[in-house]
Image (cartoon, rainbow, N blue to C red):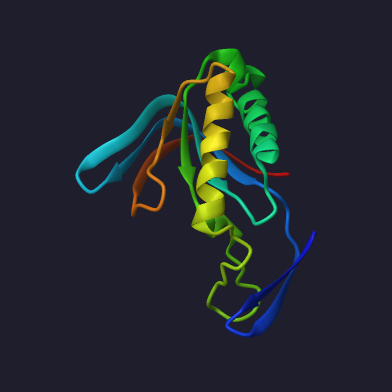
Amino acid sequence: MTETLHLRGTEITSGTVAGVRAVVQTVSSASVTVGDEVVGSIADGLLVLLGVTHDDTAATAATMARKVHELRILDDERSAADAGAPLLVVSQFTLYGDARKGRRPTWVAAAPAEVAEPLVTAFVEALRGRGAQVQTGRFRAHMLVQSVNVGPRTVLLEL
């Protein structure tokens, strides 16, 4: 879809904006720390960085959850669903950063927090509804994300 947004009185057309975006990485370990607290950690699974845009819905979040859970990115072409591998989901609005013009990214294609947070929750709940073991980061927190990427295998998914 073509996205036209108004920012400080300026009309910005961002071109084609896909739906939910996910960067999926196979990891031997991954964790999220907020302050001094580890809020989520996994071993031998998938790290999922998730971004949503303005028109995304709980249905698109659920579709992406199914796609991520069934993505055959693990050893022997297995998915997290096949292997029972855990997932660490981290909300990341910067996946919708656009720096095609200039050096300063614009975030206008990223959904605002009040839209994004329920969609990230819907994504996580859809994964859990499929029987997935899911850990999460903390929405709107400054997070330290650590991971050991295996392969490396990293896939960008868009709906």
